[in-house]
Image (cartoon, rainbow, N blue to C red; front, side, top):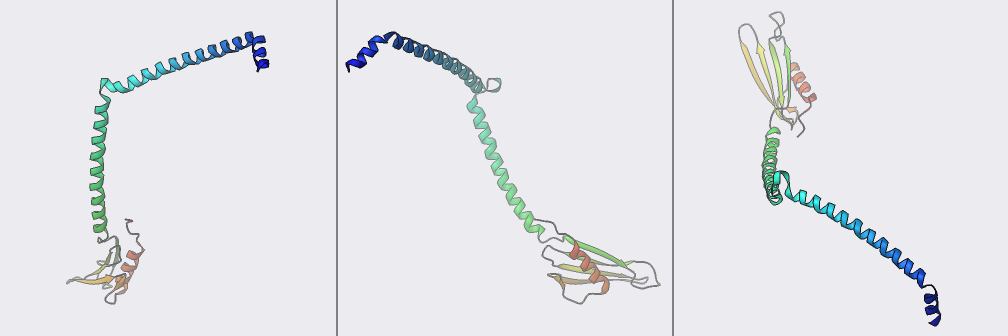
Length: 170
């Protein structure tokens, strides 16, 4: 123990110098931290003042109310979209028209076959036969892309073209 005390007594000047140097370094660090703290306090004060000296708390409440309103509108929109998807599944999405001459030598392509199909490939095929004296209208139903009654050449062509159409993606 005496040797340690002797070493300290012999080198007391160096210990004081090192201690003084550490105190100066710590004092510089404290000054730097005080400057940074003052800058942060100014930024915080500006932040709390807000735009045109508005109260920050009022701004937060307004934003919260707007978010609540948007969430309610989003919920309504999602319900509306679900209802539209349900309706869209039942609408005619695939359509085709084939014009033809039902009575060669008696006029142009005044007759036509029309195919209308839903997303689930249900629908109908309309055949409108036009002549000089009269017009006939026939309807044949289709379930899952299969007609209930045998189709004529033009009706089958209209159904095939309608099946090639791309449905609306829901």
